[in-house]
Amino acid sequence: MKKIQTLTAALLASAVLAVPALSSELRIGLNDDADVLDPAQSRTFVGRIVYTAMCDKLVDISQDMKIVPQLATEWAWSEGGKVLTMKIRDGVKFHDGETLDAAAVVATIERNMTLPESRRKSELSSVEKVEATGPLDVKFTLKTPDVTLLAQLSDRAGMIVAPKAAKELGANFGSKPVCAGPFKFVERIQQDRIVLEKFADYWDKDKILVDKIVYLPIPDTTVKLANLRAGDLDIAERISASDAESVKNDPKLTYADVIGPGYMAMYVNINNGARADNPLGKDKRLRQAFSYAIDREAIGQIVFEGTSKAGNQSFPPTSPWFNQNLPVPTRDIDKAKQLMKEAGYETLDVELQHANNTTQTQMMQVIQSMVAEAGFNVTLKATEFATLLSEQTAGNYQLSRSDWSGRIDPDGNLHQFVTCKGGINDVKYCNPEVDKLLNEARASTEDAVRKEKYDAASVILNDDMPIIYLGHQPYAYAISNKVKGWAPSPDGMIRLLGVSKD
Image 1 (tube, rainbow, N blue to C red):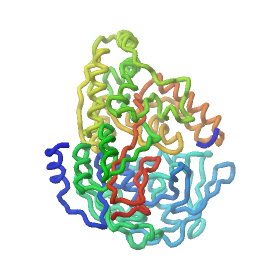
Image 2 (cartoon, rainbow, N blue to C red; image 1 turned 180 degrees about the vertical axis):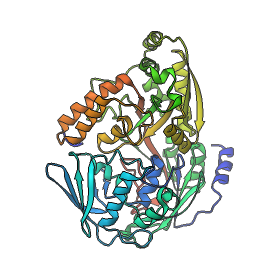
Image 3 (cartoon, rainbow, N blue to C red; image 1 turned 90 degrees about the vertical axis):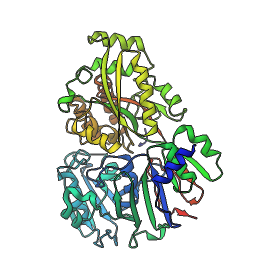
Image 4 (cartoon, helix red, strand yellow; image 1 turned 135 degrees about the vertical axis):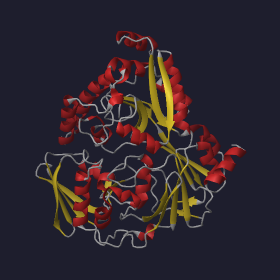
C-alpha cells in the first residue's frame, strides 16, 4: 500500500458588507466565524483558512497531498524513527520584525505542548523533547517512533509564532497574533470580519500579489452568493450544492470543488460533565439505533445534490484506510426500533445542537425527520459555530453536529478525538484498547501494520459509537473571474500565494 436570489438577500448582503472593496483587496466569504486566532488553541476549519495566509508552518501540503518544505527546508529521520532533525529556512522574519530561528521553533513547539489551553498536546504527545542544535537546526527526540509527526507539523502544531508576542500575551495571543506568513494581522471584529495585510518582509514576498485580505463570516449561503454577484466578495467558500449549477452558468463566476479528507459527524456526550447523564450517552444501543435510522445516501442527494459521499468512519470509503469490512450501513428502521426496545425505550427526547449555517440546518432537519420514525424526538438547537465548539468543549450538550476537515495522515482524523487524553475528545470517550491500537499505529512505519490497527479500532468505535459519522462533504467554491491564479486545495484551504485580482 502506498503512503497514503432574491432582493431581500441582496439588501441583506449590502448591509453585511458595508466597507468598500479596494482593487488590491481580496474579500473572502467564510461559512462561519473563526474561533480564537491562536494556532495552539484553535480548532475550526475557517480558522485554518485564515492561518493559511497568516501563519506559515514547518511543512505544508502540496496539490498532490505530499508533504513539502515551508519554514523547514529539509528534514531527516534517524535512530529507528525516534529522532527527527530539521533545517530551518534562513532569513525569515516574524510580523513584529523578530527573526525566526531554531530557538523560535523550539519555543512554539514547547508552548503547544505545555500551554494549559493548548489543543495540540495530543498531536505532539510522542515528542519527549525538542531542542535547537544550531542557529537553524532543530532536533525532535521522540518517546516512541511516530510516523504521523510530519503530518501534524503541516498544520497548527507546526505553525511557528513569535516568541516575544506569545510570552507577553499568553493565552490571549489570539487577540493580536504574530506569525511569519505572507499576510499579517490587522484587526478582528467578532462575527463581522478578520483583516490581514501584505507582509513586506515575507521570505517569498514576490508571490504576494494583493495588498489586503478581508475574511467575512456569512453563514447564509444565499446572502454569501448575492454578495459575490454584487462584487462585494471575490471568493465564497462552501456554497450550497443547490447553487452550483447557477454558478457554473454565470459568465462572471467560476465554480470549483474538492472532496476533503475529513468527515461530517455527530458527537455524543459520553462522559463530559453532568449533561452526559442521559440515555443516549449511557447506552450504546440507543446510539446504534440513532445511526440505523439515518439514510446517509439520501442526505447526500437531498442536501448535497449527490456531491458528498456517505460514510460511517473517519476515512471516506475511497480511502485506502477505510475498513471495507464495515460498509456504510443502509437505513434500517426495524433494526433501530429493536435496539431501542432492547434499551427499554419506545421514544426518546434528544437535544441536537448544530451550526446556524444554511447547509447544516437543512441537514439536521432531514435527520430530525428520519430518526423520528424510529422514536427519537429531536429538538434542534442552532447556534453560531464558535459558540457550538465552546459548548461542546464544556460538555454543555447531548448531541452535537460538527465537521472535521481532515488530515493527510489517518491519525489526524482519529487519535485526538477518541483517545482518553485526546486534545479534542469533547465526548470524553475512553477505551484503553482503542488507545493501545491507535498508539501502536502511530509507532509503526509499515502501512500494512497501521491498517490492521486502524481496522481493529474502527470495529470497536463502530460498536461503541461515541461519534456517529455521517459522510464526507465537498468543499464547493464560487470565485469571481477577476481573481487569477487560484485553485482549490485538496485539504480545503484557501492558499493565496500567486493569486491576483484584476
